[in-house]
Image (cartoon, rainbow, N blue to C red):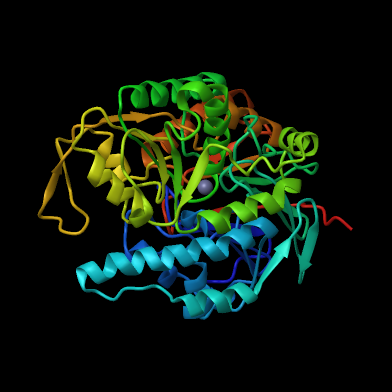
Length: 476
Ligand SMILES: [Zn+2]
């Protein structure tokens, strides 16, 4: 690819544009190259799940910033670091790095199990690659600025999950803000996304929910607890497919509190809650360690009670299904979140033939995954171990979002506060992203033709957005 001209800024994605999954975006300005995120696509396996890394010479990348630990943002990082000609430096926050290690280990394990079933060896990387990459990852504190050869970048709170960051990048006076995945709603444990003190010339922002509106949080919490309560009262089992870490802990805070409030009916093991993940204990210890990076509410609770809020009274850990005694109603939080394989899929196939059981989807379900398919309420689902065998699906399917992405109003409010003249939309399926673009353009229509005109781009993967910047002041 040709060198960028002196004042031209170039953006393009190798993945995660007009889709949710395999996020990987490139910025080029003044001969510097920044890469944002290195994810996989949860609906695909092996090499097909990667961003289009062949389309770009990765040896040109100076720095790679990882916004958070979710697989669609971080799971191809060991591949990039160990299997390509990438030579740049990699940065993430401390909690992201701590969780990244355990999470990707699980990812390696789960994906290699999936492959042995098909007889194909398509592992992207091994445990050893993961360990080697881990040692070369550098960490950054929130609100601190790092300078790598003239590329300055600062991490800000993004909400969403523990450790998630927005990055503001500054090259020769030009400022770009990358939101990663973010949330603005007050959470039980996280700091919500903040507006950086310095303005941005370019905003790269997620568009997951397009122009949709979330119900207020208090309603969603009430719906969640009531639905679960009524299901277990009728003797049903509840499966909550969750990503091992992140939003699962928020759900556990809600359920543990509710169980304590209804102890006479539900407590003392009458209706057990399980958190099933072979990462369960390790993950919880990370959460227990980083309480100081969470919001005031949870830190106050920690101080006042002198007990760690992530030491749950009503939730027990299950490492695998063999130690699970499946008698009577129970609530099971199991990973992975989109039921692609692993524990949650195994439990789904066991429980879905029974009509009094409930599968409750709380995360964002990517196109092409079992979680997305289930929402169509199919009569049968294919078994993971043998796709020719089908399992009848009679259980109830419900969706209540706790995905911690902004909705339209929250996104618009934040975008207005940033007031960047150039907005690049990423991380959204084509339709919601297109609707968001139209809504933003009509929102900013009064500025059209003035010097404050707002430009909105929704490029596809590998399509460049070129912007000319004249007269950018170099901050000294
Ligand atoms: Zn995420």
